[in-house]
Image (tube, rainbow, N blue to C red; front, side):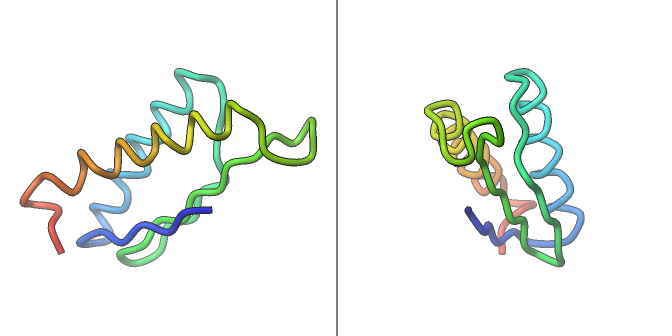
Length: 77
């Protein structure tokens, strides 16, 4: 599980959208919660009842999206 702090509610939606597009491309989707300035992502594979290699890959891709997202000044805290 990862909690990410971003600059605004709208920025949370943008980050969640970017993660969602990556998830759709990989056909592997996180549990996603959006709150004011916070996004919570949780990756797991239900068919095995835990974490798979694909979850780790998607978590790394999510971290990469978060890094790109926070490089933009309009999204800064």
